[in-house]
Picture 1 (tube, helix red, strand yellow):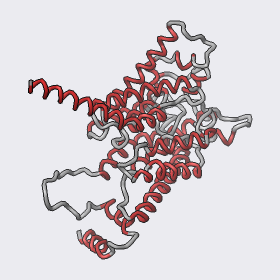
Picture 2: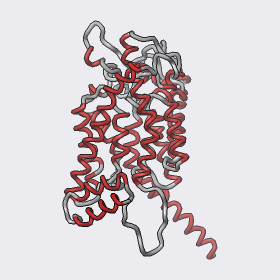
Picture 3: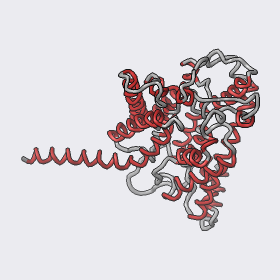
Picture 4: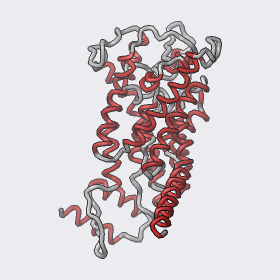
Length: 402
C-alpha cells in the first residue's frame, strides 16, 4: 500500500508533465486508479476496460499455445520427419521439438505486435495529452493469431503502425473507431503484400525458404485446395475440428475457439447473438451454394465448383469463419449495439463471408473483409432498428389516445 501511495504522490507532483500519460499507463497496469467519483448516483463494478480486455486475452491464450505447437508440427510434418498425429492428443503433436520451433516463429510476432502497437499508443497519448488507452491489449494478441507464421517482422510492424494510426487514432482512439484495428492490419497486409498472405508457401514454417528447391514445402490450406479442386486425401473432419491443419497461427483449432466462445459468453463479454447469427448466415449461404450444385446450375468446369460443393456445415471448420465470429465480429466498439441489430449484423457477416470465399478463389477466405464491411454499416443498422422501435411506440401511443 505504501508503494502505491508513493507512486500516486509522484504522479500528482508531475501532473503537468507531457510524459505523465505514459507513467499513468504503467501505474494503472498493476494498480486501480485512486480517483473515484464523489457526487451523484453511480454504479460500482469490479470490471473496467482493462479487465474486459484481459478477459478476452485469457480466451485467446489457448489458441496461441496451440498455434505454437501447430507451427512446429506442420513444419516437421511437411518435411516428413514425423508421422501425422493420431488425434488431438497425438504423441507427435505435443512434443518439445514442436514447441521450440513454434515458439521461435510465433513469439516474435507477439513481441512485434505488442511492442510496435503500444509504442504508437504511447506516442499519441503523450502528443495529445490523454491517458494511454487499453484498447490495443486485445488487438496486440489478435494480430499474431491471424497472420501466416512466417510473415516478415518488418511487414508486421509496418502494418501495425498503419492499423493503429489509420484504423483507430485518426478517429479519436479507443471507443471511437469504426473499423476493427486487427482486421485493418490484416487487410493492409493482404493488399500491400499479397504474396506473403496467400498461396501454398506461407502457411508452414520454412516453406518460403525452400521454395523452388527439390525439397520444397507446400502447406496449402483446405480452402486453397477446394478452390483449386485439389484432393483432400489424408485430412479428415476431425483434423479440421481439432486444428491439425495448415493455416493462420491461431485460427485452426475450432475446438479451442468454441471453448473461448463459451468463456466469453459466460463472462458476458462476447455477444451470443452475433456469434450465433454469424454462423446461421454462413450456413444459409452454404446451403444456397449446395442447392445450386444439386440443381445442376453450375458445371465441374467452373472455377467456383470446388468451393460450391463443400457441404454447408463444413464451411465452419475449414476456414476462419468461427474465429472471426467469436473474436472479431463481437468487438463491442465496431459491432451493432441493439439486440435486433446484432442479429442482422451477424447474419450478414456470415452470409457475405461464404459468398466472398466462393466467388473469389484468389482469396478464398472472406470473413475478415465481410466483418470490415459490416463495421461500416453497423451504425446504419442500429439507426433503422431504433427508428423502427420509435415508430412502433408512436403507433401504440396513437391507438391508446384514440
